[in-house]
Length: 111
Ligand SMILES: [Zn+2]
Image 1 (cartoon, protein in one colour):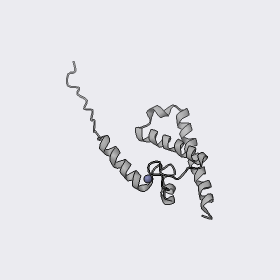
Image 2: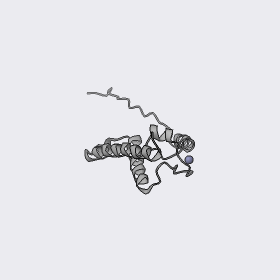
Image 3: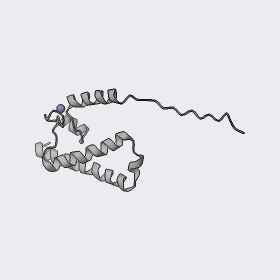
Image 4: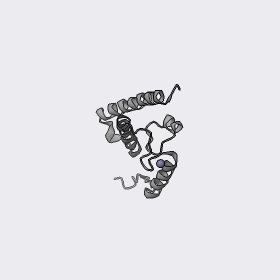
């Protein structure tokens, strides 16, 4: 990496690629079949793109501090810094209890 802006240019390319993929998915109407996590991912990508345009990319939406570049490398569409992400994940897990809905097919009353 030569300098910061080079890195962000590359990252912008990465996020743009993700957005292209996302658009393809939307065009194929597959968005209706996406899981909640995947939809969230798409939303994050769009938000990241918007932030790049506004020059606010790489800032935590929760506490406003800079998201570590190491984290952005792993997850270019990250909205939270590591700390807030952990908190967010914890809250999410708390708010939405994972309910294992098992469908047991009961075919015992056949004719
Ligand atoms: Zn934060």
